[in-house]
Image 1 (spheres, rainbow, N blue to C red):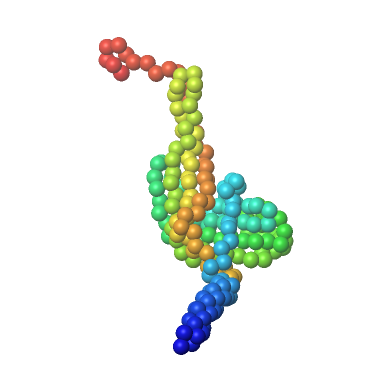
Image 2 (image 1 turned 180 degrees about the vertical axis):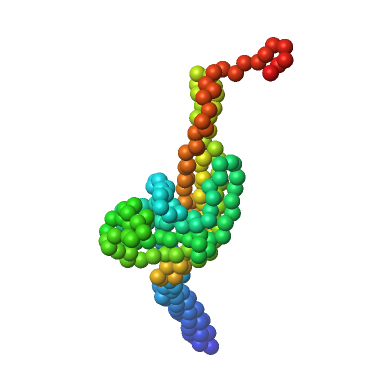
Length: 204
């Protein structure tokens, strides 16, 4: 009777061990077999690249080797005052990330008839999200008299909850910083360069 109990106990112990091993193997198999394209994360990195603008169309862009990040700002105004704009990504306000088979240049982005080369090999297109543009004045300080002068306007552009559709699924960024687009201020035709004075009696 005691021998029978020992055999049963050994069988139960071995069975539990085998069950644990099979569970671990099944879990590892599930992890290795999950290859959902929607979860493939690839990074867009243009942090050190300056924002540029085409002169003949409303495209703002960044270029790096064989990659371009393009923001089509159709109908968007860049004001000369401190303000914040929230704009939906749409068919007219598009964001596109492209790969080419060779180094990309300004002519590839801005020419009405783009050159034959380089060729676009892949493209991510933003299908949703917000464009947030924070505008602030750029001021230059005159150390001699401590006066300040507005020399331009900085438009900081950030994409919020932007969703890219790509060949192997989708990619979402909660916050994606596009960069600063700086516009020089228009010089006014004024020639008052003298120190401001006040009349002692009228206070004018």
